[in-house]
Image 1 (cartoon, rainbow over the protein chains, first blue to last red):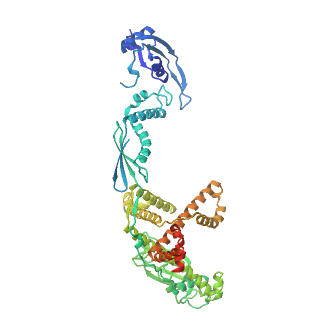
Image 2 (tube, chains in turn yellow, brown):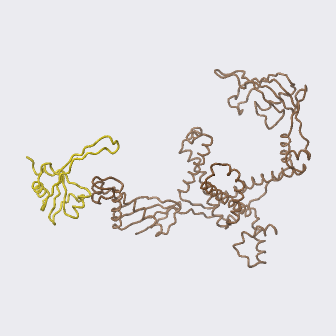
Image 3 (cartoon, rainbow over the protein chains, first blue to last red):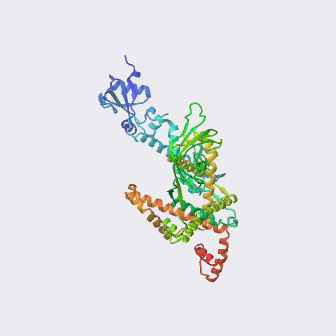
Amino acid sequence: MATIYDILRRPLVTEKSNHQMSKLHQYAFEVMGDATRTMVKEAVEELFDVKVLRVNIINAPAKRSRRARSRRVAVRHSGYKKAIVTLAAEDRIPFFEGVE
Amino acid sequence: MKIETTPLENQQVQVDVELESEVLQGYMRRAARKIAQDTRIPGFRPGKAPFDVVRRLYGDEAIQKEAVELMIDDVYPQMLTEANLEPSGPGTLKEISSFDPPKFSFIVPLAPEVTLGDYAAIRKEYAPAPVTDEEVEKVLNGLRNDMATAEPAGDRPAQEGDLVYVDLSGVLTQPAEGESETIIDERPAQFLIGDQDNDSWPYPGFSKELIGLSEGDVKDIEFTYPEDTPFTRLAGKSARFTVKVTAVKVMQYPEMDDEFAKSVGDFENFQALRDTVRTSLEARQNSEYDQQYVDELIDEIIAQSTIQYPPHMLEEEQEHILKHLQEDLAERKLDLDTYLKVRQLDRAAFIEQEVVPSAKKRLSRSLVLEKIAQAENIQLDKGELSEAVNQRLGELSQSIAQDKKYRSKAAQADLLNALAFDTANRLFNERLMDRLKRIASGQAEAEEVAAAEVEAKAAELAPGTEGGETPEAGTTEA
């Protein structure tokens, strides 16, 4: 049985997520493969002590590419499930905003 | 910005700058942006990562370091204008005493300061040695020897002044073990008996041994080399030379007459040749004397003056000398390391013992000369310069046209520039040396007196033109 500590795998910090965070108050995580919206909501509320308004979940597909230097070698990037969590206006997750 | 300057020795200034801490913040942001631009941060396009992300990845220290660099680039020129300093070279950052608020101290080298002694009061006797008749005679004799022809002497034995053709071979009488016995394998040679100038091979005085031999004679000559012979391999060894005379010839010297003068060159008569030899000898001797005279003079002026320069100028001079040395060595197919090995010096000692003193000397010399040029108001005008450049261009045009290197326009322009620069330098130096010579020999003083008289007559003569006018006025009156 998965606990709430297993659900959130890692925070996603990218240009896009940064924008969502600062403008839309949304935080992005990579989550467990069979997590649901409800599970993510509970986990975020519990761990960061915030109020979650909405969770959007997207399955980022696996991708194949070739290695930059030796173009023959094919590389496989596994897919992951991404959860975008919208928080209440007064809440924030300090973890995302640099070193506290 | 708070600035505090403390003068150090050697024409350097320490400048302490203190800035407001807000300024630092701005630079920190700029530094973060720069770091983001230069490195790849996953999830972000180059240059798009925000400050916080950069800070988390690289830490405050890295950003601070970068920020300080950026800041110094901006602050340094600003500081120079505000502190009213005129550096003579790049300054160095001595230390960063704190980041917040930012505090730096720089060391800025200033222009060298030269205080000339009373150089105008130095008097030195100017007396080039006159060319003696003997010297002229010697040159003429040399010419005559060059024009001499050798006639067969027949069966007569060789005497002083003859040219003897021999087959020469030489062996060591007691060769050391493993040493080759032969010093000279049998080979033809010729000796002019009693010739003072070319009489060192195989040993001094060898040609005298040939007196009395006639064609076909064979003679063994024993000789022990002294310890101090220039042929170091043979020092202290005895050798036996075998000569076989193949021919004895009598030198026929041309008569010293008008005919001879015509054959040497395009001279009308012998007197013209003699005069030309004399004048060219005089010119050479005078220029040598001038060089030496001025050198000594400058040394005296340097001794009188106080010269202060920042250390970086000395370093530049050292590098200049080293570079020159390396070029010279490269021409002889050597490099500096081998040269040092041959001299049995290591690099540091070599620089300490040889480069530094000569660099010091060169530097003080050039600084003093520059100052004198300023003090004496020595200038070149454009017309003179272009005339001189054109003249040299004319001399060189032949070789330039042939050289493939100078086909392109750019190379020609480069050459012209270099030529102009070189000519200007040369002219300027000539002028300066001449001026110095005049002052020290007392000529200038006489001229000034004369000039004062001229000036009294023509009161409208501006003082600025004095330099140009006096030499002519002086020479005519003095």
